[in-house]
Amino acid sequence: AQSVTQLGSHVSVSEGALVLLRCNYSSSVPPYLFWYVQYPNQGLQLLLKYTSAATLVKGINGFEAEFKKSETSFHLTKPSAHMSDAAEYFCAVWKAAGNKLTFGGGTRVLVKP
Amino acid sequence: NAGVTQTPKFQVLKTGQSMTLQCAQDMNHNSMYWYRQDPGMGLRLIYYSASEGTTDKGEVPNGYNVSRLNKREFSLRLESAAPSQTSVYFCASSESTVPGGYTFGSGTRLTVV
Image (cartoon, rainbow over all chains, first blue to last red; front, top):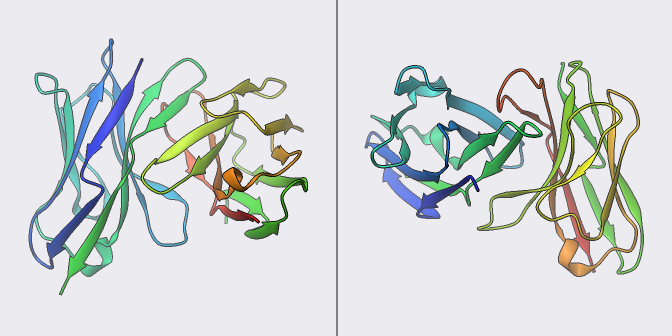
C-alpha cells in the first residue's frame, strides 16, 4: 500500500532561516508525490508535485522539493522563511486507481520574527 | 471565482441528528472527494466518486453516505451524528487525467455534541 510519513508535527523557524519539512514515502511503484499547504481556516492548495520528470521540483512561493529514490524521501525546503509561510503543510502520494491522494499527518510551521 | 463550494461553513449538531454537507464544483472535473481532517491525522478519505454515476468507499466510510447528484455536485450525509464525527470536512475535485491535481473547498467545521 502507498503511504507517506511526515516527520515532526510542528516546526518552528526564525524569519530568514531555512525551512525543511520531511516526508518519506512507501510505494511499490514509482510514485507521484505532492506537497500541499493549508493556511488558517482555508482549504489545501497545491505547492508542487513530482511526476517522475526532474527530481528537483520547484513550486510556488519559493518552495522546492527533491525526490530521492534511494532514501524514499521527498523533503520540502525553502531557503529563507517569511512570516507568510506560517501554515500547515501536507505531503501526499497519488494512487491511479480512483485518482486518489493519501495524505501524511501534516507539519505545522511557526515562523518567529 | 471558479472552484469548489461547500455549504455550510459551520454546523453544530446534537448526537443522533442527521445532516447533509453540500459540495459543488464548476470546473467540469470528473472526480470528486470527501475528506475529514483531524489534528495529527492529516486528511482521511471518506468517500470518492471517480466519475459521474460512481461512488466508492475510502479509508473511513462508516457513518457516512454520499450521492453524486450530477457531474457538479457531490453530497455527504450523516444519518445519525456521533461525537466522533466532530471534524473539519473538505470536499475536493480533480480532472482524472491530471494526477493529484486537486482543488479543495474551504471546508465545513462540524461539531457534534
